[in-house]
Image (cartoon, rainbow, N blue to C red; front, side):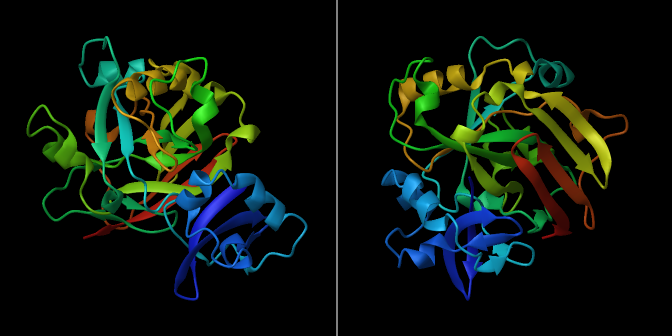
Length: 282
């Protein structure tokens, strides 16, 4: 099942992709759940699926204003330099533990919405990543149980303002400019992707392939990431983990390649989907 968050008639809702349309489950359930986070907290994905089954779509997917898959996550946990090729191009030593930083919801935009290149920098870079969406509470979760707290997967562009990222040893400023990270187009539920460590992942800038890899090449796989993160903080329904990007980022190309006004950046992950964002000056 593919679940989307969107705006319809000026009101935010959520629903299920059906062919080339969307079933507005939020409306059909009469506001029983305010948003996708509420659905996940209630453990109600099966109810969402049943409500959408066999009914005619309420609107076309094309032309609908989507929201970030989870518009209001409690936490966005990101894993840095989690592919060896990217670690080497960034000149970093092999990590003993996952490199963790955070993003905030204001830094995210949905599929087809513009990424905003900030006026403060000309070094807005792309990072294709697999996003993990948490489906229920998990604290001190073992690797064996890690997949049990996952609701689904999406595409993520961990847009990075490189000069601000390297002002200090902490990544936070360069990862949190408003509207610099893409998240979408939908969440594919975990039952459709039993093994998320086998997915081809690619980024394309104006149609040119910039990154091409497979999630099996993560330094720390998803089970290890969840075990590590939940050792120090609980994960809750609606939280998001961005699992790191492969090699090929713009800042390490010769000459460097950064996203600019008028560009189109696409992130595509097998079995998940394609996230597309135009780039505009803020």
